[in-house]
Length: 92
Image (cartoon, rainbow, N blue to C red; front, side, top):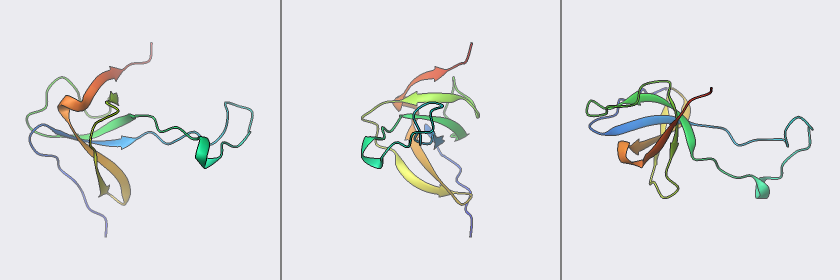
């Protein structure tokens, strides 16, 4: 059964970016031991006290943030605090 998560207060629900499976366009597989976790994700839902970011924004969050893993609509998501966001990433 899928669950929907609605953050409260200053919390934000994000869908973390997937780890890269290959090196660029080469098709060379990256072993699990060599994969690096990027602390980036797309905002899926925000709490009622959150300002300055919106749903759909790509964000960079801190390395030492303590995200809570949650199952949202059948997929793994992370629940973080607004203060853990370091930047909003915009393609130019």
